[in-house]
Image (tube, rainbow, N blue to C red; front, side, top):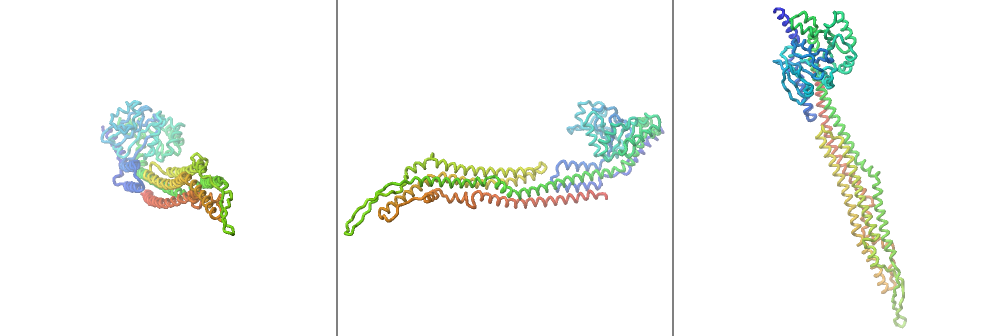
Length: 604
């Protein structure tokens, strides 16, 4: 009985050594750093659930004990080893690789098991569940959490992990994820099988990238004959695993458990488990605070750097957007000049001139010479009157025949002028389509700046495009409207213009003839092609077409100028908005940089 008490006192002494120097996390200045970071992030952008969860977990981690992961290939005796560390057989051994899951062992007032399912459900189970769970149930489980009323667990939480050579590939992924957040890693291997190529490969592939590798433990040293063989295995392990571990120890977890059952202190010391506890106390525990500080600072720094990068990206996008909007008027102008639209536009007036000339020529060519008797009265020297009848060829216009021919909707001229009007309409449509296409190109370039993580900016970008789209639409609509007006004018005025021209020419012929009859000294009317063309010009408002289709400020050039003016004014407005964004980004980056400096300088 006395021997058992002495052994229990020895165990308690080991545990007390681990518990000395504990830190009250509630007064940890790292918490203030977390709050500062949260403020900086909230100033930079919307603090989403992901960031909130990270910050909350960091705050919780300040109050949590250090975490040590037990890593190794499957069937290396991790559960037995953990039982030896804990001083009680609470973990079942011999679990098959298929059903193995991470088991986090933490302090609790009573021995209890929680099963955490992948759907977020947490259910309390009996410890025997670890041995009875089947493969189908296992697929639904995320991990286990085992509570035990052991003083050691107030300062150290252990994680029993699946083996790297488990049959379940997700177990390896889970183990790798665990290694990123622990304070210490204990690699457990069998002493008589140490240094295999499979182990070296695992260490090289998985373990080498993690800083807190800590210690290599060679289990089942009781299977060797003597201390010499044990020392040889230790030296071989050090050589085989060179550069991976700070220390290599040989133990027998079985001997440790047997010693606890018997209360045999010497057997406990011989098992080597105390050396592992000492290492946890002297190395891992002493570094746990700085490791936790390092981990928290790294996490905070990562959050700040990521947010700063997001702001830099946003600022870069703003500058790129500013450049796109600035150059867009010049690009649009250049593309219009390269598109062939101007040449097509010029052809409209050329075609109009040809049609006016053809119509004028046709009317002019329709004049006919008609013999007409002209009566001339005269007096001789005696005062007697005499009448002389003269026959003259006079230009006359077959007005009725021409009117019937030219004013018919089926006439060649009517069809040609309709075709010309359609060409004007078609150009307006082509111009509008081209401008719309250029706007679509701008939209796709602006759209590339929209991301799901920047919903507010996505809305602003779309507002920018909407304003540009409106400006393009207004100017193209104005051009289409003017061209449509010219088309209608040409169509509606053709008949009136022809009738007016014929009536005026006929009037000139008859008026001149009437005057000539009264005074033969007055000339008869001799029509010219220029007279005819001038009358056609008047009737069809040639000056209007010339002004809008040919002269310096034609519809095309006016549209180009109006577009340029509208877009440049729009750019000036949007550039001012973008500058405000950039100033805001600079201010937010300054806050993040200041907070990052606090994180870096913390503890210095």
